[in-house]
Image 1 (tube, rainbow, N blue to C red):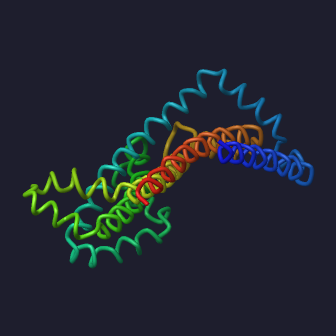
Image 2: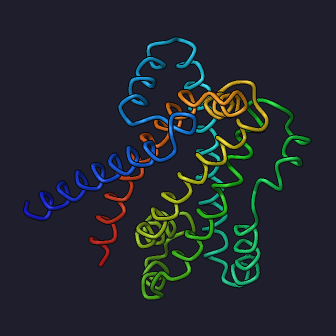
Image 3: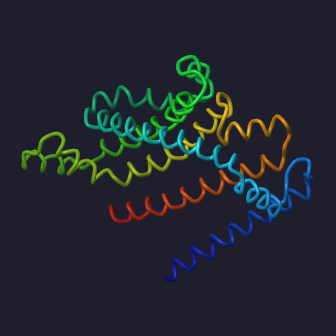
Length: 249
């Protein structure tokens, strides 16, 4: 109870500090560069009252949901395959890490040529960002599962699927979830980047247009919405992540 209250106080203090810093930056930079917090919140509420803005939100949400589903499915599948087969993991691991460090924006021309403009390109670009970290965390988690657990599975004569479902996945779940948390954030970033450079609808497209027109109120409002969404979901995922690690300890 005391810990929860302390965490709440710290969170409120952090938010208050960020708002104060935002207001100070506005005083320094001026209205040509940014808006104050209260005015940005009002602009966002005005946008949320329009149907057009909700259409952009729905477009981004659909692309992100599909990209995240691909990231989780392919990331977990690849990570489990490489984690179970140690030699393949040792060979492919450094390749995945090297690819993870490559700025994905350099791959966008290839994505556009392969998928064209629209939803497929946004989904592909989002998935490219999310698959690799999920695969790396999953591979590492499965590879570090205690051998005694695998021996127990063999003694019980569990098949490959039952071994994954009853032994590997529960034992590796805390680290896998950490990978899912990272993959969530990177998939969102990738989807928005895809909309900024190769779409005609969505929050990324709206943000890019606002930058081109130097529409500061729209830039600030869309950015605030994205920050609120990402911060809220990330906070929830961090709480779950900590509980999983605490139970596994």
